[in-house]
Image (tube, rainbow, N blue to C red; front, side, top):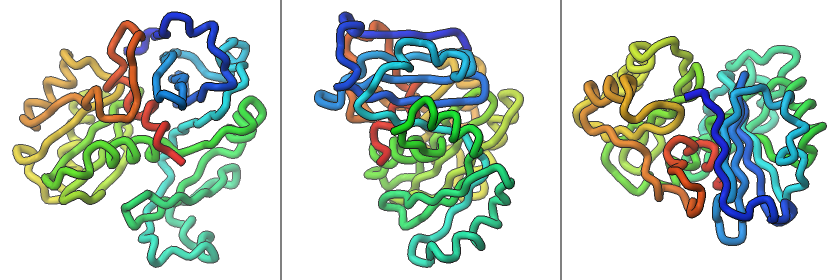
Length: 271
């Protein structure tokens, strides 16, 4: 699942970038991008590049002057604080829970409708490099688009749900129950057994039985491969994330882009 993917609608090259939005999802050795028309919410181009983004900055797509740019960056340094008790003046004390390094910058963001504020850290050097190339970009930790996409599409369901989002080398897990956000974590994994272990651990920690959970899988995996089959074996009510779960349209791309790019496209919901 690491091969290059580039899909575009007919006539994409003739569109004005000033009327379009750019979404970037950056990992250590790869990146995804999507180009969206905010007027009609249509995806004009989407891609996976198995290379470091800073090696590709001469790409004409990345050099274009977009109306808006949103970027998702990975971090494992985050914690959650109830918004009702969070005070900005105490941020330095809260930040101790994530132990930021001297070269990392600490941010906060309230998770919409959850009553929770997330505190997280991102590398300053990476932020500076991205700022030089994308000076007007809005930058989010990887948990934000995944959370926004899940709560937009599935929070109206009151039964317990577990969401698995597979990325190169790590997996994100979210649990919703009774219309509410209950759990998020991200885990590094080396093989399918470790990935499955973390999904089962999340269910156990939240006192949920795998047989009673609806599980939706998105991200970088083969829907007919061993990883998906192993998840189904433990969680019999497993599905892929729905094509129509986000308020976007994908006509003319030639291939399905959901659920492969679910978290990338969920940047559409991040503000």
